[in-house]
Length: 392
Ligand code: AMP
Image 1 (spheres, rainbow, N blue to C red):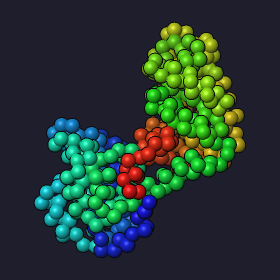
Image 2 (tube, rainbow, N blue to C red; image 1 turned 120 degrees about the vertical axis):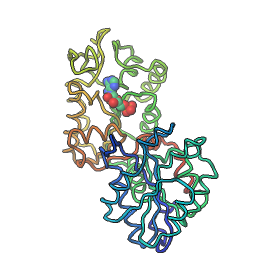
Image 3 (cartoon, protein in one colour; image 1 turned 180 degrees about the vertical axis):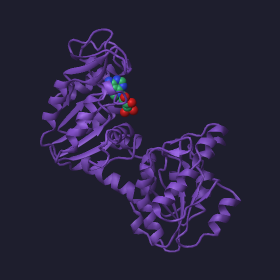
Image 4 (cartoon, rainbow, N blue to C red; image 1 turned 30 degrees about the vertical axis):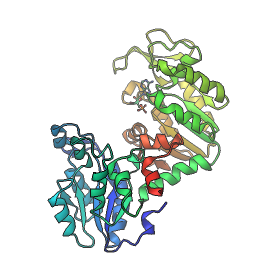
């Protein structure tokens, strides 16, 4: 698969599909991480005296009103600041304005088109990978670079669609993400310890199964541990459980019980609110009204022992309801411990990254993945359509 450095870019119109899907509240960007992470590739293309055309999606666009809150205009402003170059924003996704702007470009120019998902209003053309739309966008450029790691697991017109028609490759961000995650999957420094949490157990069972082939230990915490605990016969009270996955959790546990580690105590609450009454319960002492919301102190100590001397640590999903102060201890302690680890610590998934940022550990790790679903699918061993299209 080619990367941006394999192409001669000078004088060429280079379409870069970035993932600039940042949170915006009242027109203000509240976290610009994804823009920052995208700058390196864009800068490389500008410095190579090309004409850079940037495409990205932002949020979901299902109604005309969604257009008001999902314009990329503030993103173009922020990108321009970070890049130190003007970024001309074209408030359209196609048509004369777009074509004229592209035709008028000179070397070193950067333009950004409006949110690709504005095209979803007309028959889901972007998200449904409408062939005409992909062909149209491709007609604007000479080379296509996919640097949107977060959407590699989707076959959309702005990634798969365009790459069918142009010489294509990946950008520096996608390269970095793939290198780090593939190294962990293929030749991790050992011991290789995986930590999984979050609420949706169904999303992560494929990850458990795939990582069990390579990891030395897999700790399962967060909301997802309760389906496993219930599968093993424990009472989990009112904790979150996916009843449809109990049998599968039982099977996975039986197959990999030498590797899977579950909590032995849990911080339970009377509700998932700041006012909840809380206590630490052994997993054999969870009462009917208890909601498991964080791991307990013994489990934290146990996890620390497991992590001592680890070569690679891959963590996806918060191990408690970190958004609430009364249930964030496990996630905070783990972040603190890992920030001092000599191992390669890789954080994946939007909520894990958000937890690291919230508690001040954003720059303390070997790698924080910008992908959510894409990271999980990669870890599951699935083929990512956005990548598969490039290698063809
Ligand atoms: P996911 O998208 O599956 O990674 O889930 C992330 C969410 O899991 C976060 O918002 C956490 O608050 C939530 N979470 C973590 N631990 C628990 C728990 N014990 N019960 C319910 N939700 C949890």
